[in-house]
Length: 315
Image 1 (cartoon, rainbow, N blue to C red):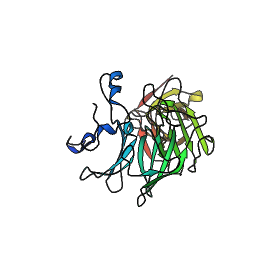
Image 2 (image 1 turned 60 degrees about the vertical axis):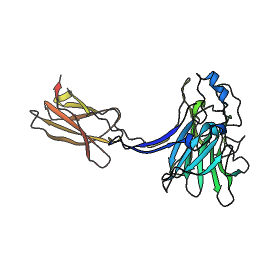
Image 3 (image 1 turned 90 degrees about the horizontal axis):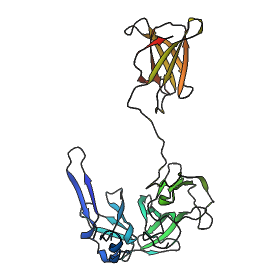
Image 4 (image 1 turned 90 degrees about the vertical axis):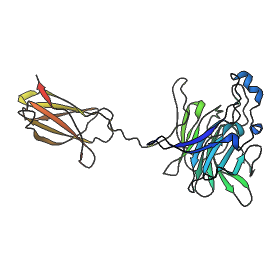
């Protein structure tokens, strides 16, 4: 049998800070995957398949075990399971459309809510779907031990992701869903939709090419900060002028360029204080003959964020 263990390691020292073995707390007989499946998986029974971990505001851990159809709230200090949602020993009953199967990416949400991607499918490699895949946000009523569906996010046409996937809360209130093995990724207004109405509140939908899939898909504002400096080149221009070319592949913060020139590499001064970036490569003209040139990348505040090597002008 294949076990699953959760660990935290101090990267600075390599010291093991925390360890939690699901076999110490959950009976493998609770698995929704039969032990006989080992005959088609190299002799290994994957009873648990822990596939996500999240840390809550009080330090508790939310652990998803795909093959148990269950999510566990674990007390970090003791390792005890505080409550179980789903599976054969659930501490909660379920309202309409609140149950889930083969889930992925369970996350704490404010206000006694959790989110996940409900694959709804499948006991691989040849299982049949329990239900259609969708993003799911659940309300947890602790006094009454009841889980109800707060929001659902379905795709049109309907998808059946056999593995992987995620549901991400965006800062603007929208939800971003990665459809795992089904290759799509989508953004929805927070209000979501229902099964059979997957186009409602859909803002963005895309599919990766060919057979590409994504374990999880996230939307973030990406900032490119290359480890290498900007590039510069200088050429003779018309009328004795110089044309300086500036680029910095991968930099998303560069908004403008500053050009320096001088008679030798140690005597450079600013000859163009600000030239707006015009694309991958920006051409800047100057009356200064150089023949030594250098460029500086400027951000939106006009601050220098990168400096090229000194180059010489060529004809």
